[in-house]
Image (tube, rainbow, N blue to C red; front, side, top):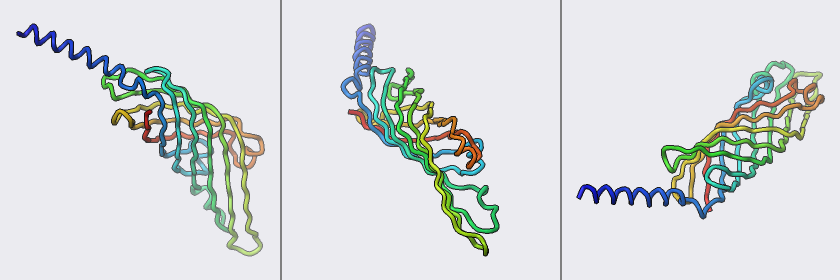
Length: 209
């Protein structure tokens, strides 16, 4: 009797493992949205404070280990105390970064069939804009506005995980590092930095179909 119970258990485990392997076999496209928080580092971090980001992502699972896709993102960073030292007036400053990136991800095996840790690398186009608005509060000084923008190529390596909430929905959390090197001489001369370094922590939801 015990022998039959063991055989039945082994058969049941086999069919469960087969079901697990085919759990998302017919649903290999994922589309999702994420919200995050970016913390500027380096010389940019001396001028800008942390701010929010949003990201839209679409990706295709080539197999259970690899996926490729694309993403669009936008972030808004505010000014920090660097801009508060001018007694002649006040500054209203913001930093905007938009991107359109290609992304490849590798998924690791885990103890839980619903848990999918991964590493990925995104690469592509970044748009950087710094907008400065000065409002004079003392005589002999004029108001002025200035906007500087630049288009660059950059990287965004990240680590994270997907967790399947259901057959259709997955929760995503990841930590990424945005790196935009070699800003132009004019940007460097004006802003004082020649690269952008931005760690970001984000969470999101993906729909699988």
